[in-house]
Image 1 (cartoon, one colour):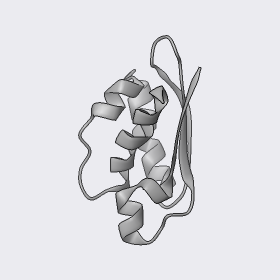
Image 2 (cartoon, rainbow, N blue to C red):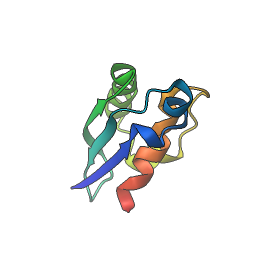
Image 3 (tube, rainbow, N blue to C red):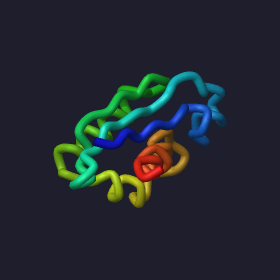
Image 4 (cartoon, helix red, strand yellow):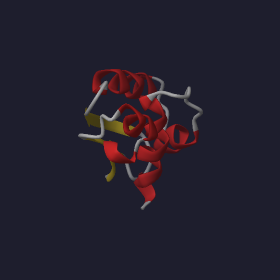
Length: 88
């Protein structure tokens, strides 16, 4: 199992909105890259969680999410950065 984590203070849209409190964290299967679960505590966390839920339903991997193109300017852009931390 691997853990991806990112403070909201590292998400560009959160900085622009002045809402940098909180974090995003995801649990990823080390062998398959499958997203097993996540927690988002911060502004619009529920909306970000919905995107992760759909990714899980679609069986996207952490690499898929790290390389996906998300609409700008949204907090969802932080998902690229979050899932890029899995291999650190």
